[in-house]
Each structure stands twice: as structure tokens, then as C-alpha cells.
Image (cartoon, rainbow, N blue to C red):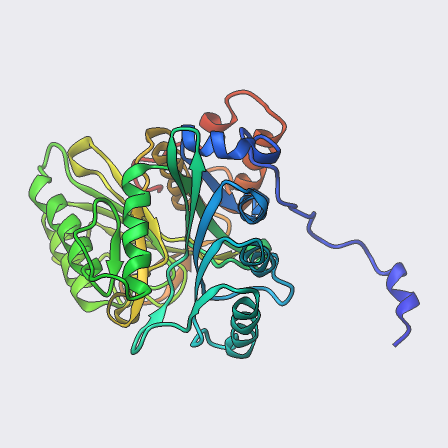
Length: 402
């Protein structure tokens, strides 16, 4: 092939959407103070994954950091995450890493990284017997001016610098006392130091995640009235769990309004008379692979929103170690609500699931709206410091479009 001819090829049909710098995150080690003051939500790949990598690099070199605990499911071939963990172990910090050896197609790479981490002095665990560890979690323990501090990262996607440019995912950075206490207990459980405890905030599979979701659905049924119906909005990769589907059907019959964004397999049938008239299912396939999981419950007006690694599938709820965490900061919860608004407003790349199981392009007389493009435009505006971009980028839609 004559590679010189590549220069004469036409320009790419689509403009690049490079990751943008998230606003409000200062350079250098000031990030510790920022996270201690408030939770941060990053929306990848529209917003850069760099703050997460920087946090790890800082932790590796910071003499005040005592310990780092992390779950690795998939990593990149030249992983900055692993290099930071190696450096931390070499610097004498207590580094504990659970490396999942059953990550399909990444088994050999994960074995290599695990051995390198062991050689550097890290404590490495090779998964859990009979389970696949799919949770995305990081905990950093640091000596602060007033005592021990803990910093957490929980995501919907992998610690993989390559796929974070191709997948749409969410990151939560937090020093919330309850969340960090739960993650401390979580790592004690998966490393075999203690038995599972009653969680303050998180839900963990296979230890009670399905019952937690079923309880949240049941609460919407109980609180739903004709004047103020309950509402469930959720985004996931797949919906095939029979108990969850049955609960959603029951909720629909009780008048709960349900909007679902399911990228892949969906065994639920929306719009069936007497069963699921109040359920709408859409799917978006666009430039970035939709990979985030978001679960929102109206809760009588006191909305609760969760993100995590689990889909509504038996394998996630029964045979994997998964984490789902609440987003308790009101501003971040409102941002997630606007993100869901945009997903359900998309009439360019969205398809709607019909009662017969077919997917059809959504008919709409409204102005074309493409969610992923709006997300990138909003991220760019935030990075450039334009006022009111966060509130004005997405117009909330509280009812199904025509």
C-alpha cells in the first residue's frame, strides 16, 4: 500500500470531539482540597479522565498517602493506572489491588499487570472464587492536618485510558464519610479481612443488589397516585433480569411512569395493553459506546439517583461483584437528571422499542436533537467557562415526545 496517498484522502466526515477539561478542578495537589469540599462528577469521554489519573499519580508520590486500594477489571496496554500503583508500592505505600483474571479477552494482560504489581511490592488478589469482580472502585487513605482522610472514586467504566476515549461513562470523586466508610468495608470484604456489613449508602452484588432495586421499584408503586404518579428513569446496557422486569410491569400497571434507555438486549416489552402502557424503551447507538448505568427514582419528589457498574442482568446481580452508589449532592443529581432528559429527547440517533420487539426510528416533529453532540457541546462550553451552560444545555422533557 502506498501510504503517501493517505495525505490526499478527503478530510474525515465528522469533526473530532476531543475530551474537555472539567471545570472547577484545580491543577496539582489542590485536587485533594477540592474533593474534600465537594463531590465531583465527570462525564466521559466528553470530559477528560485526566483528573482520575492525576489523583492516582499524586497519591503515588504524596508522602501523606498511606494506602491505595483498587479493583482492576480492564486496563490499557500501556496502563498509566498500573504504573502509578507500581510507583506507590515502590514508595512504601500499602497498595492492595484486586485484579480480575476472568475479564474476557484481557486475561493475559491482567496476569502480566498482576505480576508486575506483586514485584513492586503490592498486595495482589486474583479475583474471588466463583465470582467475577466487575466493580469500578478506588480508595485512597491519606494523613491530613486533622487526622486520617479518605478519598474515593467510583465509576461506571474501566480504568482504561484507551476505552475511556471511546465509551460513554461516569466518574464520581468523593470524600463523603459514609461512602468512604462503605468502600473501606467493601475492600475488607473482597480481600477476605471481614464479613459483609450493613452498608450505609452503597449496594453490592451479589449481596443484596437485586433486593435493593426491587425495593426502590416497590416504593415507587406505593407512592404513586393518579395526581402524582411515581417515576423511574434508568439507563443501562441490558435488561434481561426476570424479577426486575416483572416488578417494572407491576409498577406500570400501578401507574408509575417508566423511561428506560437500554443499549443492548432488552426482554421487557413496552406498550403492551394491560401490562406496560406506561413504559417507554429507547436505545441510542452513536459515535461513543453507551456504557454508563444511571438509575433515578422520583421517591415522592425526594429524587434518588444512583450510578454503578451493574446492568439489570442475572449475571450482574447474581454472579458478579458489582457496586451501585447514590449520588447525594443535589447539584450532581440535577446534572444526572439533565443527562437523562437529553437521552430521552434524542430524535437523531435514538430508536424506540415497540411492543412487537422491533426497533423503529422515533417519529418527531421537533427540531433534530442528538444527545451525544449536545453532551460534547456542553462539555466544551463548561471548559471555556461560559455562564449558565450547565442549566441551559438540555431542555427537560417531563413527558414523552410526540
